[in-house]
Image: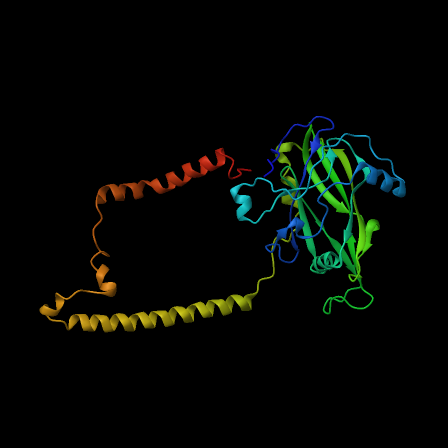
Length: 332
């Protein structure tokens, strides 16, 4: 696994800045997420020859910079909390350096098979979004867009499905630290993938814009995320499903209680009718532990004192501090 870049790194000019991809999923249900490379995105950056040829076609000048080559789809080391919430952080092949704005660069040229195009189409029709990170700053965007689609029927004759193939990174800095990050898509560079019956050659590209944020300190970098959110803060509550589940739980609990009461009643009545000779017979079932249920604990004073002063809370606090010091969980 690849070692993560620590947040708050102080960069020097032209230092490599790593873009970490995380996951994709439907916008209407952000809890349903998949790894970013479940969709056929670029795993490797284009070569210098391919990039120079594509730059001539786009009529742009490429920057003369020595970039660090990185492969995509390599797992990142994650904290325990990130794994619990379903993060799947991986490397990406984007080559970005600190302070160097780029008008246009070729990421890769990829031949999409019909099944790859179908996967992109399904994701776009389900309003899939992607999530990326620069250090610990999240960025979100849509994979594509649909034109002339019916809200009820969905895709119909005449509707178009477009794939966003160009990403524009907006990166803000202050005192040689990255304090803001945002990614947008270019509507002018989208590709029509409506026809999924034949393979297509797709050209993925990106651009980078660096700007100074003199009023935003690094320790306040998360303040803008509190003011605006990409994902909805509240979702539609399905009351009918909740009521059905609640009634089902009540019915099952009632049935289980009735069965247990009938079994225990029969056992108690049979147990009370036994004489002294029959009492010496071997007991079975729940009666084997009836004497252990109310057994007095050993060292009751020590037990009550430990629970009373909250030793369990002290142990949990110490345990969490150890996890935070070792970097397993994040304190930010």
